[in-house]
Image (cartoon, rainbow, N blue to C red; front, side, top):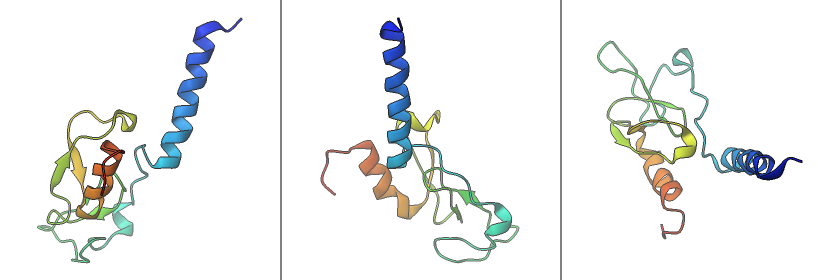
Length: 102
């Protein structure tokens, strides 16, 4: 029989589906060429105003709008703090503290 090992694999698969539904996985990044300007403040990117990808939503933002680094739930598979755009900060907080009030 499958035993405990099969149950473990099944539980992992269920967690994977749940993670995708809840947005608990690495997002697909918006391509640089699809973002001529910051997707938060709309400022145009230049040699000096560089693109940064939010590790929660995958959108492209300038440093002013994406300068915070925070730790993510383990389901994302990141090691260490990662960049988060300003609009995603409260969303990340809720993912990390699901039982806390907004």
